[in-house]
Image 1: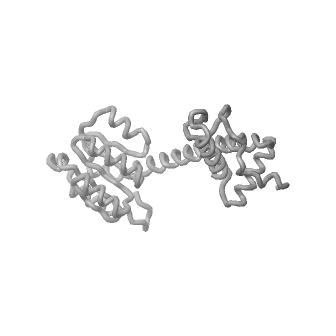
Image 2: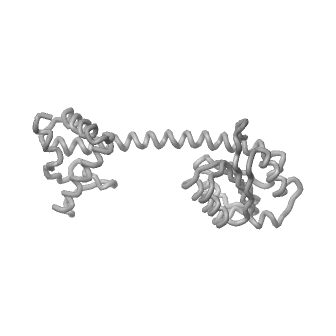
Image 3: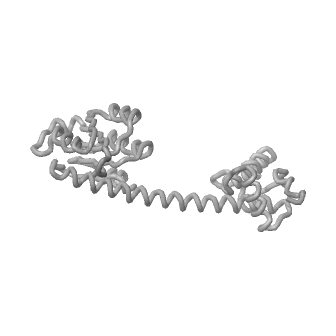
Length: 237
């Protein structure tokens, strides 16, 4: 649960279908009381209310209680993970397996089938926090790796453009690095600018003959006219 001295803000979404089937040890008031021991708790009963509240405030944990994990709730969870990632625990009694698999694919959601008794809630939230932190770390590492691969591709494409103006690969690399430093950009950002300028020139010259990849950047074999974007480098730079 929350670290000592840190207040946890929890949001409970209790779908009306869940509230309509009261069960001993699975009562909304008991859930609320349990989480209130760790901080502020807000209880809402509709998807629209939850989305509005999430837009206005920041929460640490979202507990979803529903009889059936239907499409509206799935959409709410997916939008929440995209806009305001947080620890999410979902308790449902019925669900579609394919939809549930898609929902759990990111690894940041903890799903509890059937009944979630109050005496398990604290340990479930702790588990969900651990899962969320581990999955978020993994996703961040994947993103970092993806960004590095993208940067390498952009630099390779930009070097090709510069080399077609008469420079060897080492000099082309140096030119791009130098211009990136002068403009306060990363090498990847500078490479993207070079590619964008040449792509725009190529589009105005011959839209049908320019070979591009999915990012709209020239690749090997593309028709690339000699650009004047690096002409200053011929002056001994």
